[in-house]
Length: 94
Image 1 (tube, one colour):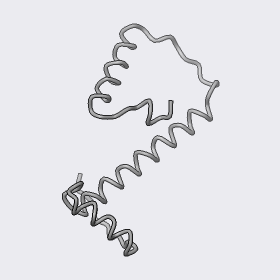
Image 2 (cartoon, helix red, strand yellow; image 1 turned 180 degrees about the horizontal axis):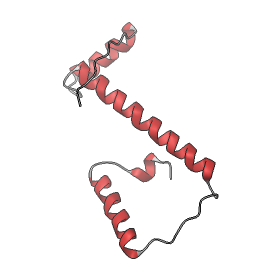
Image 3 (cartoon, one colour; image 1 turned 90 degrees about the vertical axis):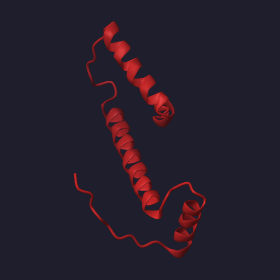
Image 4 (tube, rainbow, N blue to C red; image 1 turned 30 degrees about the vertical axis):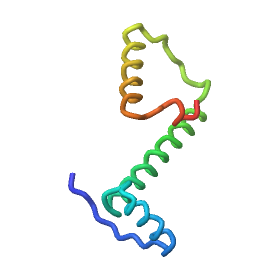
């Protein structure tokens, strides 16, 4: 998929703080800092919407008991995410 381009205006103070982060080597460029910030905002929005949906439907869904193989697959996915540096339980506030 071809990347899209946007133009962003920042207040001087915000730009200066962002530039300090880049200068410290946390990001290789201002572009990388902005892309990561947008990714984080999108991820947070997705989690928020998912939690709202869960809260809305809490207690209304019929669920089935998971088989041992399904439990193992979920555990494997969780551990993969954990090894990648994500703590899903903390991220979801559980």
